Length: 50
Image (cartoon, rainbow, N blue to C red; front, side, top):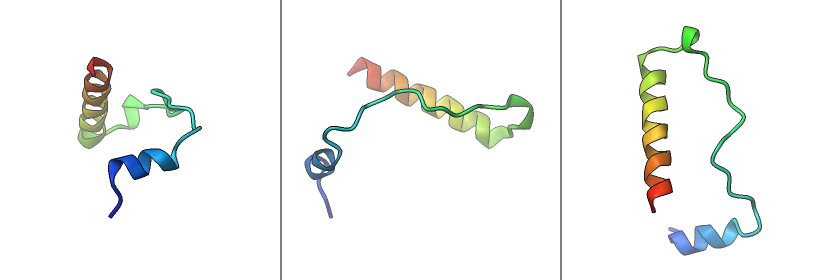
């Protein structure tokens, strides 16, 4: 089992980005998609606070 520090070491030199090139099609989304979108927004907000 790897630790957080070991995982971070494997990603050194890679850019850290917030946004991904993914389109959200509300007309094709179901309830689970909307819930996932809300959870992702909340996670982004928590990350920005720290």
